[in-house]
Length: 233
Ligand SMILES: [Zn+2]
Image 1 (cartoon, rainbow, N blue to C red):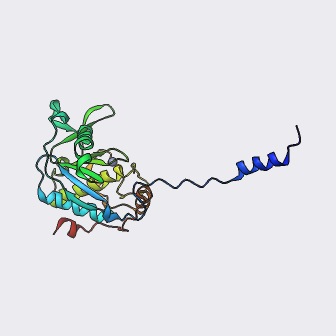
Image 2 (image 1 turned 90 degrees about the vertical axis):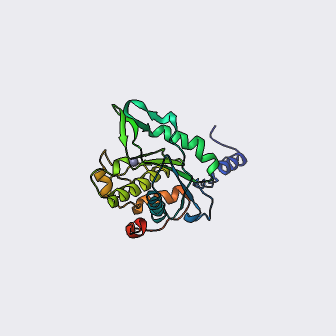
Image 3 (image 1 turned 135 degrees about the vertical axis):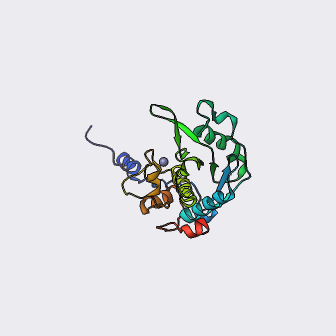
């Protein structure tokens, strides 16, 4: 058939030519949400020095503009203990936060903080000690101060802890590792805390923009951490 009734053709054209409205990108927060409306809760798992919690709270606020506060301490969950190495499995800690803390805490993000050593299975390593872990694009992350302290001053240890916190929250906010620009927050530590020392602890421009589009929220444009404020000295 080489001829089509004009009416049918019009109908076909109509159906095929109406541009469908582009789907609005799905963001995590409704329009009009400000960074300060986003509530990040630190969940101490076991006893954690108040000075550590304060530094992490201030660092999170400085890097992201979020409101940060600390919840009452909870014990490390027994189910996460890995007896052969006397460490705590970080993925089990994240599961614990998802199941036990997120539902009732009223927080947009929950960051577990512990002084105990934490670990995951990494490649051929059954139990690999780490600085922190987060589920990608989630509400949970966990950090440990255990590996930030060796052979360094308390100030350096605190700076590392704050940087690990902003890095892990970056994962929870949907960012993967990105080594395209050295010194950016989401550089892959590659098993050494020295990488953390080289990071600013705040999102680089492309990292900030990626988070802004995920959240639907503008973040402060900061290029460096104000360590005097964050560390209170
Ligand atoms: Zn990472």
